[in-house]
Image (cartoon, rainbow, N blue to C red):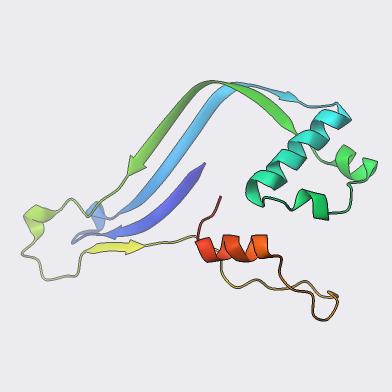
Length: 137
């Protein structure tokens, strides 16, 4: 998994970079075949991202559960790499070109209702709160 936090613009092409966060996990993955275990994993995923939403959704059909793969993995090892900060070309500070970081943000913005929603259907408060918080889970 990688997230780009910003473009790092230096005074030379060589010193341009990217601020990022990256994580890798290692272990042996196993396909989850049990329907109840798959359903529970999918419920936990939805609830972790959007608390309270699962109970308002229609139940998944057996075909939908069957068509969705779920993997389980015991993490045996993990590693992370992070690059954060300005360009590392302070020795070239006398060169007259703008240098610095162009931050990149991932954030929730105004919701776009799906076609066919009944007139007057409001966004659930839990989703409005999530958007207002500015946090991606």
